[in-house]
Image (tube, rainbow, N blue to C red; front, side, top):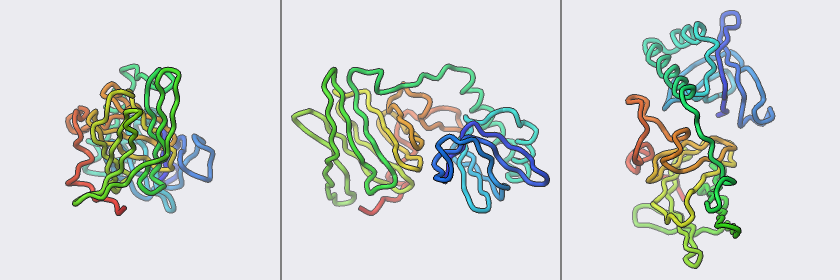
Length: 252
């Protein structure tokens, strides 16, 4: 599934299509401005509009919508999603208002003297690619991990007790990873996604969506990428989206 950002609808003859910056599509450079072919189906999932064309699928986050197509947006939602169209339109508008009403802080590992960067990709087994640690002027990188067999569930551990770090996580389907609490010695912790698909990270600091090619701060301070409870218009304070009960385990 490809990603569209800064998107809007256009009506072309008797069909609809979407313009936007495309990500994760090998046919285009990252961020290429494109339009889709004729839309065949729409559905809404967790703050995202899923767009189906004849040969492709796209995900378009509500909060990256450009409000230059209000009339056509309403028509498209009514044609494809009635009777839920009004509710979805209001959610798109609310997400956009939240984005526009506040200055969203961008966080980067370069801004901190001490931090950890977990690099993941949903394209490889277990997801883990590398761990980079920074503490003042010292730098450390590892690609090593241990797979622990559990009675009910296996887990991955990235640890070095001399350097005093330990990251333990469980792998789920749907590109999801759930982390146990970690030591605060190397906080803040970032998740870098070098894969082609979005990944979801569940932590004691909240649940986060990490788009392809982006680096996300795993902290309660990061209100931009934390997963929203759209119904209540609030962000989750604990790990509720990616749970042991609702997500099928990956096979190790």
